[in-house]
Length: 324
Image (cartoon, rainbow, N blue to C red; front, side, top):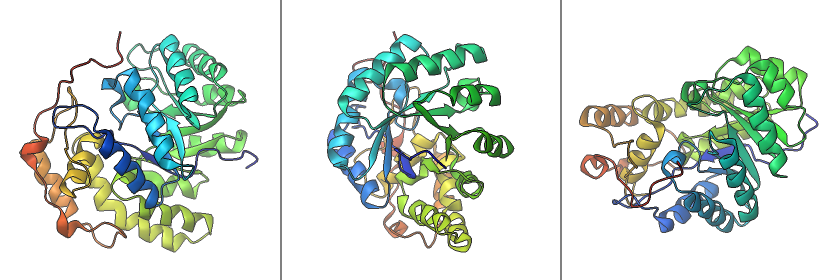
């Protein structure tokens, strides 16, 4: 791989901790960023899907970059996720993020308005032209309604600022094909598939479950780097029930906050509407999966005290998010 990696390998798709009223809890943000970096993360993606970008205001997004940059003190790269399905708005956000100190940017495929591949490519090129930061394309058709087609990835790869893809499409044969034909790096965007992605040449992961347990992902990535598949597989297997708890029953953000709050690592599990906390049956499923988790370094579930009441419902913040 001729490209130098400016992003890190173990990247956390950071949750944005809120107060019970739904305002950003900046003390919790700082503590959580420090926690995950100390446990092995070398990259932080703020304001991504997991950070509830859809309901954050632009000033909150920029402040998240500034705070993450300050807390990391060079220990981890800070990437701005999110963006916008309006090209003009996305350009503004990424320019402001660069000024705020971001080390990289992540471009999600425009969602809801369903552009053609020509529109997707134009969007990506214009964003990459607007900033000098290295960029990751985010391919997640389940959320956007639009995949980044193989041909589009190849064409986008010719832009000097577009260096990587976050893959949540799960087409491993396409990943191999792109890795063969470009210098793009790949990041697994699906927590259950991190090891398979790494095994075929991906650079790293951008993970939700890494909010809860970054350490085993560090072990997995370091093991793959060292050619030690047995150690990597053991980490993958230990993570499996935790990934299931966080990713399969309700949105990952909601589950991650519920688990982190139950572990005493954030002050409130609150999410912003239209997201809501788990209903009783969903909370019970999460708790049942967690009961199967053993042997994850740095994760002591004997102190897990879930609070279904604190997590119930969703917050309606005083200032509406970034839509206009």
